[in-house]
Length: 325
Image (cartoon, rainbow, N blue to C red; front, side, top):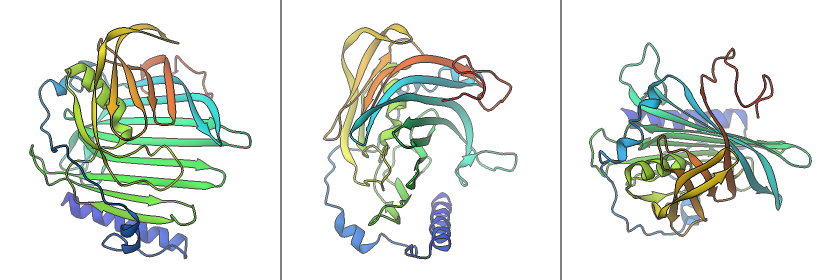
């Protein structure tokens, strides 16, 4: 049923895109043959799927996640746009919620089956000479396994917008190799356009989940072996080819100083053929990400608060009203 619903949503997305832009090609029930030829062969050797251990669940089972608030982390961040480093404030939001697995949204009064989940949102507004670049990432993982459920990534700038949609379908029992991933994208760039790429493959992880996985690695002391997609932090269509990767602790605990203060941390690194990626994670619970380098973005933690950001009467300890970054 979940798989059927996923395909229906994808079909609706593509048909809607055709209705808005007459030049967009119609949807197909299978990958486009020309797109298929452009994607190179790949070889994955890491044996996946995996079954989450009790140690791996320690991070997601922390009592702090049940206080009804969201963890709001603000970073002094930098990324490169138009060949220049751009400084800005990057915001990470994380809170628990119950998810409707058929609709892929927050469960409501009329939802039937629900899945306990975490919502992880990254909000960015990056200034350039003539206009700002805006990125919004919404990622959902199952609690307590942290296995991916859904992810959307949108980018907006004055030339146009790009939208990337990822939907994971999996059986309810572990372990299993019957996982699948649907990727849908809408790009304004010539030669990219709109498309859909279904992956009937074993587990594939999104790069954008790594900040959560790094925290679980420190909490559990375990590594995470993955078939990992490249970063989607750009304005183009996604690269759908996963790469073998291992997320693990590198070295002994050490002192890390960031704008918010000094903390004992462990560095978590990604061993793979992709871009340099690491996270300095607080050794003490709740194992906050203190500093990171993730592809073209790097950041250092400067403030954390727990609040109901959806309540407009709840004042932030970081920014003044009507001045959110």
